[in-house]
Length: 431
Image 1 (tube, rainbow, N blue to C red):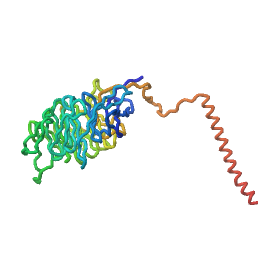
Image 2 (tube, rainbow, N blue to C red; image 1 turned 30 degrees about the horizontal axis):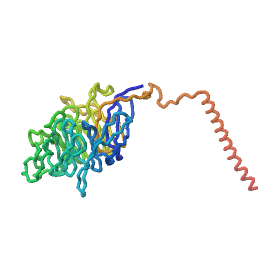
Image 3 (cartoon, rainbow, N blue to C red; image 1 turned 180 degrees about the vertical axis):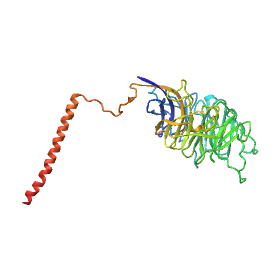
Image 4 (tube, rainbow, N blue to C red; image 1 turned 90 degrees about the vertical axis):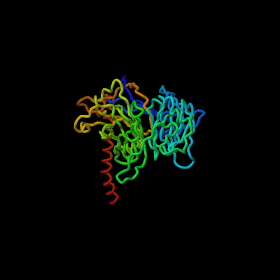
């Protein structure tokens, strides 16, 4: 019997009414991740579609599906349990045009959640899937994030400058379109100012694709833009404190602050996933990814640490990519004091620890650290011993094997004799 630790996740599935449980073994002997496909029981409610957004609240899981329904799900505890829909609501979407979910995040330490659609509609949920209020922002909202603690959240989008709102006030009053240019909406506590004009004195378009608050802060946040930049903001001023061009191709579609200070992971619209130093804006190293990462999730370091990893390494990042693959990466935290020289060349900084295929493309949830027990430990080849060495054969099996070979040999002899007799028969016929 061997017991090992695991990193557990809840992820979307490719099929409707399904939730995946992905359990990845700690770094060490080669073990495949355990993926369980759990059917979602909906009972009196509508069947849950393919999940696009997923978040964990104090009451369970909250899922947004491709039918624009929000469903509250129970979290299975035992392996024979399945998630059950406890409440459900239908989002309002226009009958014409394309609408997609662009965000689902928690506020008030998980007591409430907020969803956003590309139409600009934001909705508040408290304890269940019933909407406790909604309002429409001034344009297409493409990113939504929150620090988790407190009632603040941030949003941004196409010609929607990144702004910070207070959920306790934003969903109470009605927003009015008749406002001055720089006047804040009810519940809006801060709004960024666009970057200066470019070298040709042309206005740079506002187009935020991703956002995230830095750990432990409700005033420091970062965004990823369609122009391929990562911008850092401090809500004590309106202009960005950092603006770095980092993407190789397309925009920056996902950002995730790491567990270490000054560490940020980002992904562009190609297959680039990399670590960024927020002090200098320098790309420190790239993470091996074979497809566009749609969702990134930075992971905490367990206590005690995984023994198989070096002291300067961690299982620090997980992603779901456009190829419907879940990946867990080894990362190297940014040092508190950057050494002289090129730190990025001091050995491999990242590698893929584990992969699971056939997951749904969307946001996912880290369920925590768990453990699993296997009856038979993984076979490890001894030094000087071939891993593909055949198993021993007993005397009876060996005797049957030799008898079978004799029969095969006699058959070959008969075939040879028949081939020799064939020309002789032809000669007799000619005569």
